[in-house]
Structures are given as C-alpha cells and as structure tokens.
Length: 138
Image 1 (cartoon, rainbow, N blue to C red):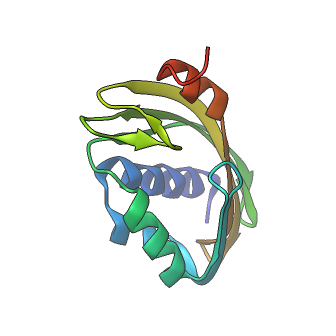
Image 2 (image 1 turned 45 degrees about the vertical axis):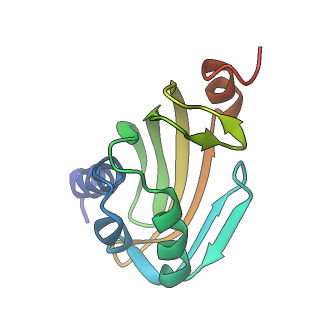
C-alpha cells in the first residue's frame, strides 16, 4: 500500500468511530488482532473479543475522532488524533458523572499492520485533560 493509501486507510478507520460503525471498524483488523488501551485497562486478543469491547464503547453521536497526522509505513506506525466526546444526560465516564458535558483531548494509536490490516493497536490519550474538562479533576 502506498503512503497515500495508508493515510486514506487510517482516515477511514477513524471515521468508523465517529459514525459508530463497529462492523466497519472491525473490517480494518486481522482476525488475530491484539488491542490494548492502558488508560481503560483493556487488553483483548482477536477480532471477536475486540468487537465485544467496541460494542460497549462505540457511542454514535458521542465520540468523534479527528485525524491529525499519520507517521509510518506498510508494517505500522502511529496515528495522532483528536477525540471529542459530547456526553448526553445520565452518562458516566471512568466512574465520573459526565452528564451533558464534553471534552476534547489528543491521543495516539500505535498500529502494527499486516497485509493492509491492523494486527496490533495500543491507544494512549490524555485522560487527565478529559477529566479536568468534565469537572472531575481541578
């Protein structure tokens, strides 16, 4: 895949989060994908396990991931993104009441690629900034 093709793939993958398109996102992964988000304390292996995790996380209309930059090649790289979350009534996030609040933070996904699909992903993002913006931290 060309550099432009990789960036297009990554942009399309991130857009699945914004649309709440679990099936579309899962189509971007290998069957044996390894996924980790240390902030949430999540680590799963396999597309089916990742799908179950995504079903609990994807909130159409709540989460928007905006592409900022891709650095990498055919074997993998890092994508920087901006996460905007607009929580509705009665919502919690990391155990905190975030009803009708929002945050905008930056993060990065470190991706391993195989045959044009994501085979490994580690997400890192600004949890402190998110919690400050929703009033959970000073």
